[in-house]
Length: 141
Image (cartoon, rainbow, N blue to C red; front, side):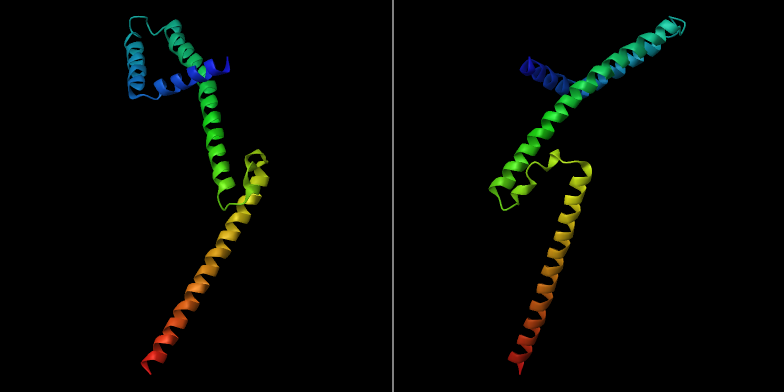
């Protein structure tokens, strides 16, 4: 059942993202609007488009959410594998299961560490430049 749903969700997500699908939807709205005078702009005429768009929107929310959940999980698994085999800290694996405030705390720690690293690199570069300048003055004398 799950594989069948995934297959359908993928197909619907693909088809609904096509320019042709958008054009067909626009055409449906135009045809509906043009039939307004024929039906006297009745409540039933309005109910047709309202009901149709509501049902489609309702169903699409679940399909899109399913697709987004799978895409997010796949990306997370790929990132976890890169962390696992790389030089990253393994304690970052699985942080997507933490609360928003816990993730924010980790992100802030990472930003502070990156800033310290950048400052250290800048200080080392400045020190190296000063040493090179002193070395060139010694060679000139």
